[in-house]
Structure formats: structure tokens, C-alpha cells
Image 1 (tube, rainbow, N blue to C red):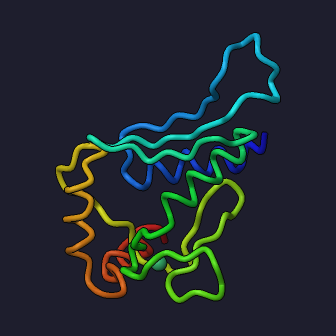
Image 2: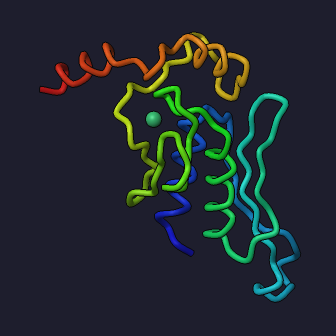
Length: 144
Ligand SMILES: [Zn+2]
């Protein structure tokens, strides 16, 4: 098990607004460990994004991260891509975090309960093209 990949997936699910995250495996405890199939799941209100049938928790976590990122829109309003050959905002696994290649400010979901996909989509729709740069500058000033 690669801790970095599992932690990065937990963190990503949290940042993606999921209400819950779980990693586990099928089968009984008396089955041989190598027969277990691992899954990782992020839960939203009324929805689950799952990656299952994996040989290890690392593979399950990586699979779920790819599912969360594929087809997603970055906070800079570009589509997320995991491949250099595709247009969009390139995300990479950096240590224990999935990081975008842009520096747009994180999107806040006002009043949204965790896992509220509609609130998340509404908040994303308010983001200007290229992302929230004004608040990014403000955040940098605060850090100095
Ligand atoms: Zn981006």
C-alpha cells in the first residue's frame, strides 16, 4: 500500500466536496488476502462515485482519484486533464496531494452542505473564466 496515493485520494475527495470517503475490500477475513478486491468510494447526497475491483488499496485510491478528476472542471474553469497530450488544466500527483497546474483560488460553496452536488455546480457556474484571480491575490497578500 502506497500511503501517499491513499492520502492524496482522501484529500481530493474532501476538496471535491464529497460528504464521505471510504476505502475497503470485499470478501471474508478467512479468504486469502490476495483474492480480496479493493474499492474506494466518495459519497455525495444521493450519489456515489466508486472505483472497485482492484488488487490493492493503492490501485483503488488511484482509480477513484482518476474518476473524480476525469471530466471534472478545475477551479480555473478549464477541464481537468491527466495527460500532457490533452488540452485543459493538467493535474499531477505531487507527494500527498493532487495539484492543478494553475494557481486560481479555490472555489467556495456558500451555505452548501458537504456532498451537495447541486450547490457545488452552482458555485462553479459563478466562477469567471480563468478562475477567481482577485481572491487569489488577496490570499497571497494575507500570507505575506
Ligand atoms: Zn486549473
